[in-house]
Image 1: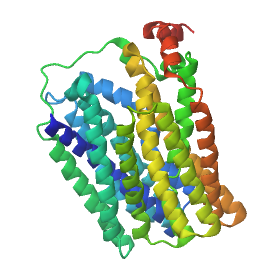
Image 2 (image 1 turned 45 degrees about the vertical axis):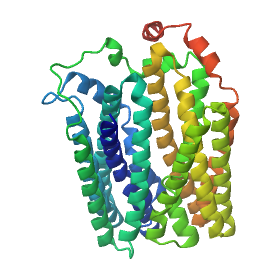
Image 3 (image 1 turned 120 degrees about the horizontal axis):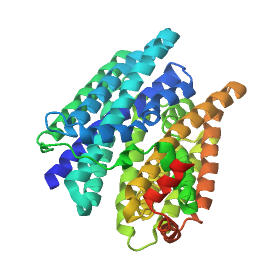
Length: 435
């Protein structure tokens, strides 16, 4: 099973490798070098999350429609191919945007849309395959291996791109994206080889798969604890992930960092996150999960404070310290909140609640990117000071972190399960369909 877990991790890493060039390099080039709107960049980079609701449809369709006897592999491969095509052509589209706005915009929607659609096709399919191959008892080990391989691959990709992009030029950028795309495709295909066994016939699931998202959402809202946790996750992840598109451009604007240097920020952030992911796993049995989550949340909040202060006082050492603290806090917050999320389910309705928390995740990534891009553009336009625009974004994220920390104090998994146990899933859906 270890080999299969490593192969699954390779697939997870391959898809993640296509995210790094766009979220840690192209975003900086588009905002700083090409002087494009941060809001536009944020929207294009968020297309995977715009398309995330289709994951349920993709998963359900692949359940019933195997290709050549394989229910997951063809859909993973299709998704990976779309991701690779997207990452290869997006630099060309970015330069087109700077020269021919309307043509570049339509090409951008197609290119980033292909990347976003591929991300959803691949991720839902390989997570379903991971669940099927691992069984209930082995899923936690499989997820741990997959995420460790993914984070390491993102760090190595960031370091490698930093070297390839020195010195920076548009041609070097396109060649680097091409190399990363082909490397990701090779790793993903290698991970797929012999991984899935053929099925004689498709598995037919119950009618639960046909339930509308709106009805499921209304059912979740019946539980006050579930509602609070949904909002908590949404605000927390807006704060944590809203900086994804802006951290590298901020380094370029505030400290005149090169493309190579800002690209390598991902390796610093990811390395620190990897440390606290491991430490958090060791501490989980010794401290309450909510305590660990709060410690990680406070750490991330302090990281944002340092990053905002670095911009206000032009102190690059404080900026690097803020990136380190943010990575450490994010790692601890992630592992603790994932564990807490699993506690906020019931055995009978685990799919329902995990789906809701996943939807909250996607919604927050989209909201965070759009919020950050909008604030940066508006403040920069009004003040004629780009650095101030970024600082205000980080201050907004500090406020959201504070609200999420306050919300977590009222979340109680025991109270959640008591309320969830009073009404069955089918009864909730019946209520939703009758209204």
